[in-house]
Amino acid sequence: MEYITLSNGVRMPQLGYGVYQVTKDECEQCVLDALDAGYRSIDTAQSYFNEEEVGQAIERSGIDRKEIFLTSKVWIEHFGHEECRKSVLESMEKLRTDYLDLMLLHQPFGDTYGAWRALEELYDEGKLRAIGISNHYVDRMVEFANFTRIRPMVNQMETHPLNQQKNLKEWADKYDIRLEAWAPFGEGRNGLFENETLQKIGQKYGKTTAQVMLRWHIQRGVIVIPKSVHKERMIENLNIFDFSLSEVDMKQIAQMDTATSAFFSHQDPAMVEWFVKMVEERKSQHDSSKEKKNW
Ligand SMILES: NC(=O)c1ccc[n+]([C@@H]2O[C@H](COP(=O)([O-])OP(=O)(O)OC[C@H]3O[C@@H](n4cnc5c(N)ncnc54)[C@H](OP(=O)(O)O)[C@@H]3O)[C@@H](O)[C@H]2O)c1
Image (cartoon, rainbow, N blue to C red; front, side, top):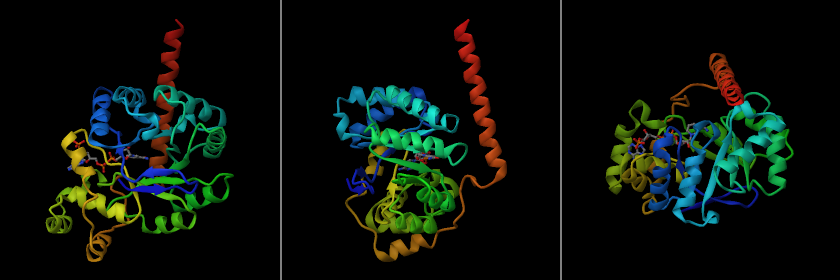
């Protein structure tokens, strides 16, 4: 395993396991499989609704908590100072831990500054070893780096060969913020697993397109958290530290960049409204279930 040192000196495994779209039913077994395969970094989030299962798996694995780098993310409806603090403590309870290695603000909407102050305080108290942001495009990231007391240590962004975040990475490097790739394979969209350039490169080393993509991220200094519910793929995705891509390979992959999201843009106002609607719906679901409990 290779490690990335964050700006505060904390060492983070450069390759971890992400559990977005891993259902509540499959999550505990998947995390157990990932830990058994050798992963020691797990990325979850409040909005994935599987923090409990991640916590159960870590406990059941018997692996010392200190050996595992655990990340979660605060969802928008918990932004603002008070709510954020409360929600982080709740996440820790669900994850059966009294500290987190990294806590991120999941989206760049709502009272992010209030929420950030809560993360700063929890960091000061030693409950969070590192704090960061996610989906903060380059302008928001630079703003956040300049108008906060503690600068984010990580920015988790959609990053893969078709959306390489070259400009953002340059600015992130300037501010000592590590780039962490979500969807390191672009979830396989636009035929990435079958891409000819990646296949040809892989053939030279006896590696799959998935392994070539992960190796490319690693050599760029980017942190990766690929997701798979299949143990054989978890193992395949870990097996990338026994070869190196040449400079020519790296340049060829660099040329694949379209600098366009394979998903959606956070700068699209219709998407911002979609997030607002989702938060409202979740709040009303939460309120009505609270009412039911009070009956
Ligand atoms: N901050 C954010 O807003 C945000 C957004 C999205 C994701 N994330 C984080 O980033 C993690 C990774 O992103 P992601 O899950 O969206 O996408 P991803 O890791 O790019 O792709 C996952 C997809 O690739 C497949 N796959 C995995 N390994 C493979 C292999 N070796 N060969 C062929 N197919 C393979 C998986 O299928 P199977 O599962 O069927 O194997 C799944 O369909 C998430 O789990 C989450 O922790 C964060």
